[in-house]
Length: 119
Image (cartoon, rainbow, N blue to C red; front, side):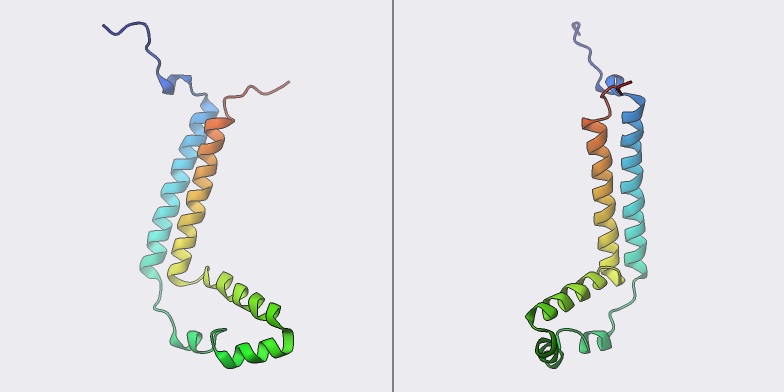
């Protein structure tokens, strides 16, 4: 006794919505594969970079003397942002950006793709 309530959610989706879902899945899969490859091939962190970084108290004191506290904060922000694009942090960045882009595709496909265009 199946009744008359045979609603198939996949049958109600428009072709544009299906393409957005497929694009989101492809972006997510591609970014996760790329992140895994980057993570596996990332070199070990260099000790010289950490030795001469913003964490050095002499550098912070000199930078604060010349540019103030705001300059020290901007230097820390700049170093953090540059760190996102190197080594294992790059793998995490690629994975997060890919997940955000895939989520945007799913969001647009779910909420906005079924609307009819105005002529």
